[in-house]
Length: 121
Length: 109
Image: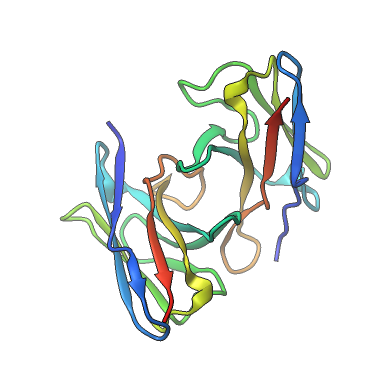
């Protein structure tokens, strides 16, 4: 069945880096855009980034632009989020979610179970 | 940038109808999707393209989009519908942004 599984979360000090992964299965990964969405403790959903199905186009929320980099390896059915210069306000559960088929239009479905990133000294 | 506005909370008695709104400037010209999130779980898509329902989502869930308000309607509410609900759209007008509403906590009385 369709599945996305995130990994790589943990506790990291402010200013340090962390890389998240999202392993996909049950669908043709290379034909879908994929999103990262985060949720701070007790807060709502915040869109973080998207990458096109072929990796050529990427867009970021203003809050992470210049610090985070989204990438994908279609040969490994895996999405990544490289997070640099982490701040306390980046503390959140990070979800990956499948986007549109060969386009940016469309809904987010399914979602992974999320991985918690805690930025703290 | 485009803003989606949801009421923070809503409450409804079992068996009644819940309506959760999502306000935005001329939102009827956008395509709105809705997600349900229960405590400790990942969000689940319940409505896409304003009013379409994914397989596995009960017919009690429906959506509409008109003027400056999109609405998620849950008929014959059950205790299991208690959750946070988020609207979402793609703002392609400027630099691409995917926007979520602030979420509505639905309480079943």
